[in-house]
Length: 435
RNA sequence: UCCUCUGUAGCUCAGCGGUAGAGCGGGUGGCUGUUAACCACUAGGUCGUUGGUUCGAUCCCAACCGGAGGAGCCA
Image (tube, rainbow, N blue to C red):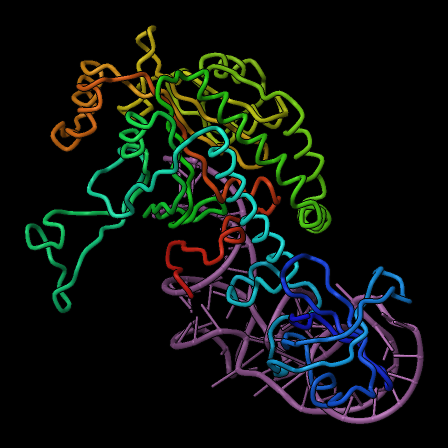
């Protein structure tokens, strides 16, 4: 066995070592007799954090708390851990652990969170691959602005201390880190029918909240010959499938989260897996909010965006389950969303979940060339910059739809962890790019 | 960007206008098939930084820096 010492209990004639190799939450109890060769150097000097190689026999444990233990016949101290090792066996705050992000995966909580993260990434690929979706790698450096998605990071090269600009730039024009792969994803959906992207995304928003990071991962499926209803169905089906997979494959880690992070976690996840989601149009949602009698801080009126407090009321109080809101006024949504027949709304949808708010945002895309061009003009955008995007409507256009799912938001929902900085290995937020 | 809270030992915190305490962690010794082990002893702090008020500031005030929560924006 190989692993790191989580804690040790010495007596005069033997020691108990709790060894963990990160493969699961549980430690393996090592019983090390003082008569072992090299006991002083390998066991007595092995503090919390030290790495060990242990040979021995798995036997039934005499003590309570574990069924098995390893009776060591040989222990080698691979790497010692001096007395200034920062992790104690008692609880640390997540804020402190963030400051030692290189060591926090050695804690129970972060081990669990990042095992779940890995499993959910796998489950996402499996969900789409099983349904015949093609995984597309959209560019990270892009010259296109997925309008409305947020502030962008510039990508530049330097001449000494000076930024190369204009035609002197590496790409001959301004480029940015992607804020969304959607527009590029649409081009592949209009060839391979069902595609998805899953990769890093960057937003230079100066937002300081527990739900925003400058670098995060996003899943963006795009489906050809698809309308909004099917799009919503796919989003709901995916959330259910991922939650269900987590319950099955990450039971031990989720149980830990349920005990130490969020007492109602597992009950909520089962509820999401087993129950139907609610759906409500934006128009009906506004009426529901106006009629509910709750004194909101921000005004509710047709044509205004739903505020966080409104979304939370709908998903946490009114429906008390994940809720999809659809058909938003065209004025508050970007140019590429499909105009509905009423002339007032677009085929957009947001999937809201209790405790997090918006987890999925999507829409049916405008496939009609004239309507798309009119939208671009109406919103004062430069048509020439979207030439290739408009081409999709010139040549064999099809109704298509898609959505974006914030991977970290999903992980917050699945683990109950309240801060996005604690579900991404090395979080980037305004002013913070450590490690 | 706006609002609120916060910064004291390695960690989590208490405290007070007269220059500091606990628990845990560390060290030493003891002890027990132990389980967030236990018992004893011990080391460890320019009280975020810079100014100001005061006889005197860790405490009161201001600015700045860091952390957290909320809002906006979103994923």
